[in-house]
Image (cartoon, rainbow, N blue to C red):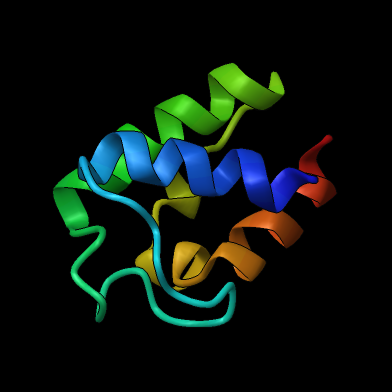
Length: 76
């Protein structure tokens, strides 16, 4: 269920549908870039009521929908 919400957030930020697998790179696919990552982090914090420290703003932690879902689960 988290993956659907995360996918919706990514689509809103990217301005296009997320048509890649949950284990595919959001950055290599062109859906996200380093600038969009900060927008995504803000949206994740709002949507899930979590705090993401600046030290975690590493694209590798947010590379795929699966990784984002795991990260969010660990923070909830």
